[in-house]
Amino acid sequence: MNVRVLLNSRLMAIVAVAGIAAVLPAFFPSAYYYRVAALVFVFALAAIGLNLLMGFAGQVSLGHAGFIGIGAYAVAVGPTHFGLPPWLSFVAGAALSAIVAFLVGRPILRLKGHYLAVATLGFGVLLSIVFTNEAKLTGGPDGMSVPHLVLFGWAARGSETWYWISAVSFMIGAALALNLLDSPAGRALRAIHDSEVAARMLGIDVARMKLTVFVISAVYASIAGSYLALFNGLITPEVSGFLRSIELVAMVVLGGMGSIMGSLVGSAILVVLPQALTFLHDYEHMALGLILMGVLIFLRGGVVPSVAAMFARRRP
Image (cartoon, rainbow, N blue to C red):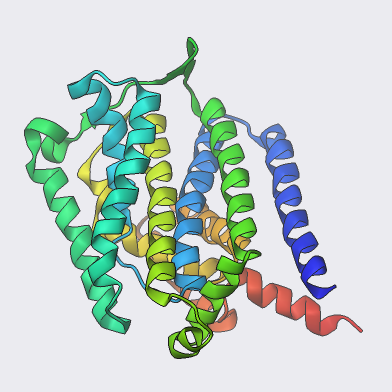
């Protein structure tokens, strides 16, 4: 019964977000607001994948922006250099990210703690260097333009169009993640998070499960990167930089590790808040830092889990 109640509450959360996404455009006075909201959903999609890896499997990654870069450059390099349609380049980018994650994950996921964090950091930095130095293929530091996504003669253009694409994609990604977590594989991931030794004693193939969730998280990041490139129409190596990886980790931590909806909240905080604080000019970054510190101090488990716990304590 408790499992059913939990599942229904998670599904209701997706329905609630869908309702908010449907109503929100009525309050947008310009296309700029569509753009900001679309970016929230795009980064939330990448944060879902990282949350599966960190919040449920307990594996730290400081180089996940590298997979965003693979997806982003796939939709730029494919049509430009190989004549592939953008939709096929999109699929190829996700497949390439999965292959790279599989090959890289086999050795580095044997590491634990700060050793794993440093290894993933090195992987992300390496990809960023490749994207910057391979100027003939990627355009170098200046980046390269990205053609529009065209399906059956329809071209995805404009902030409003990408708002709906990214919102629907987030709903699908969140539903798939919740379905994974409510499966035996999801319970195995939570067991690995609590104790790898105990998980092995229960017969769980720890290495295989960690590699599987690493590949899945890479595909989520790749899809988000492709959306970001197609949406902006331009891609630079900055998309795969170290600061982008740290930003993704911050989204997961702020929203709540182990919370799928927390990925959306964390993304909203780090995308919307800097835009809302621009009126402070030179003090914008100081105010942003103070707010983030306050959230982490007073809501230590992240926004969504902490608020949920407060409501649970108030129930009779």
